[in-house]
Length: 286
Length: 349
Image (cartoon, rainbow over all chains, first blue to last red; front, top):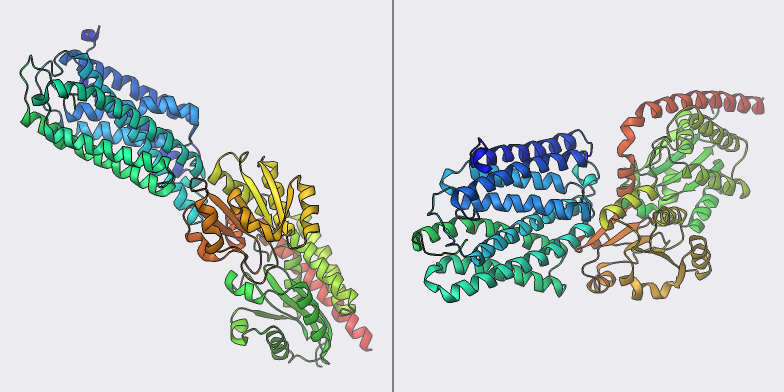
């Protein structure tokens, strides 16, 4: 059925990114007019972008016959997709005002930005995961956890903005529509724990593969991934011990997410240069 | 005296002239206010006088027999309360005659208030007038001035919409609390002192469903009475420091001459609740909470000036109504001025 669709995967990603950008601009205009945007409209726009992006991922997956996580472009698209999916899950539960606006901004940046960098969309051999479903699960979980960390970073940015407004006695504009600092802090804590659980599970699946095929996993990628994971573990432990809370927790979440994002490009490059598998070989996803 | 009533005056300092840290130095207790009023009235050149002391203003209304009374009143006030004359001169105003009248009318109407259009000031002016009249410090001129001012205030309010859209301190506090805690149903409130504004603020928080309200005051009976009204509990004033960690919102309005909350006594309490923010509302004059408390992580400190600034954010929308009210008061002031002059002339003849 996907073959019948007269659209390339990149066109679908571009339409999706445009809809996310439209959602973000819609939020900006509403805020400039000093009015809260209708949540239903934001939800509808994000849903539209999400459906088109899902189509793009499906088209790409059908083309490579695997989960589309083989290069930086696909990973960026998958993280953006995970971020919106998480918004659909946590948005109605926590009912955080402006979360949709911030999600739209970050997904437009990730999705649109990756489209503007052709170097990120390097071709790679078909069957990159070697048909090993466990390694595909490892990759999908790892990238999904990055989506969780993306939403944690967004919530942390919202926390810092609201806290700045309260400390500086600002009452108008963006500040009045943001959720409370306590809600944001609590949500960041819960999501951070969730993200660490997903990333730990992903690393466990990856570790089983690595033990059996150590020569197929680039050491640079392994080191960077473990470093990011250790960073999140330390932050979660300190948070649970109430030693790293509120503002410092928010700053740590943002820095760790930026580090995780910054590591994607060198990690992917390392994989392509260190370990180019044969078409029959299995390799790690990320 | 070439002109009758040429020595009707008002000397004062309010939020227009003095910032919070200066105003709190000018602030007087009820006893000091009475004492100052008596001393001014004892001056042989003062025929009538009245002292108004609220959290935002200290004003001395008077009628003198000489137009050169200003330096003496300033000296008397500064000497009596150990104030720097230079500081007071830099942050005070002096109006005479028609200007003094217009000022009294605008104060009573709430046009001169920090939160423009607020109604509490009328009660405070009535209280100050009753006190001065009972002490025998006012007579025909100030009696008529203040009684007519109260009528003019009501008239201006009923003919304009200056109070429409006006946000109370309590509503601002509730909005801020919502920005800090979200839903307030698990927030615990501590009221230190039993002032009128703090009571209203606590009631506004109660109406939004705070978990509980605890009151502590130097006079336990007052605390118990207010706690009963608010459906809360009272604790001894000596105990509040030990229990600070249990409270999310602390409203201070004591008459303490120095601060009662500082980094020193708040830091240990905050360590016991590192994940929960603390919202401090300082409604006292002089302030009850040291300003450097604001630097503490997870603490949000708001004083009277901060809350009033937020409440006045919709002031521009009410600007036309405020100008209209001012015009009404000008007419009242002019009529009253003519009446007072006529009376004064008649009494002389």
